Amino acid sequence: MIVRVVSTHNRSALIEYLDPEEGIKRGIIPEELIFNNEVTDELLFVAIPYGVDWASALEGVLHEITPRTFADALYGYGFWTLQDLRQNPNAVIGVLLSVCGVDFQTLVIAAERQELHGGM
Image (cartoon, rainbow, N blue to C red; front, side, top):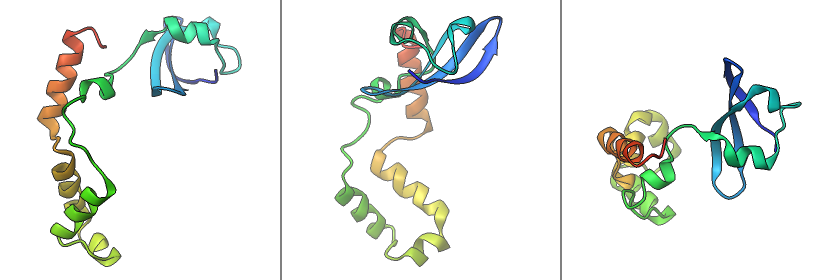
């Protein structure tokens, strides 16, 4: 599997790779086992996971988001044209927050819950 070396420290490497089933992942492996930015799939299986597993952490926290739900929220906030978006790009963040139903504190709580359950 092709990996990107994010950083190295004391002969360990923090790598990033695309898992076909789980999306973007990061892990820590011995630096000397990376050859031409490639590692074996077996090595990825035993890599020390790095970061919050956001998909698991946010399970049950996010609302069901569909294109229709998002479109209705944009209309509700007065975004009907490209010009509307360009005139008030910061307000789009408010639309995203309202549709997702997630704020900073919710993310922190989800990450803390993951950490307590050994997710990091």
